[in-house]
Length: 76
Image (cartoon, rainbow, N blue to C red; front, side, top):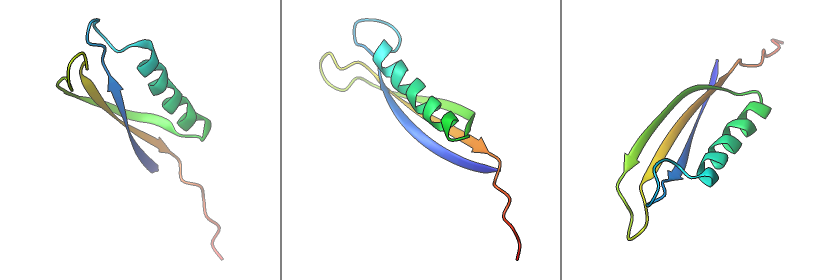
């Protein structure tokens, strides 16, 4: 197996609860791009950090681990 690790920063809205549609679509875009290249999402974890400034909301760091079968190499 081969693995790839990516980190995506999601920004929470200050006023509402949960990630806004834009950040969720960004996360979905990253996952779909990797799937198009043959990668399968293996593990997903998040870490939350506090607000960054007035009306900033929280930031969530999403760590995504993707996997795929290694291509067989021909021996000479």
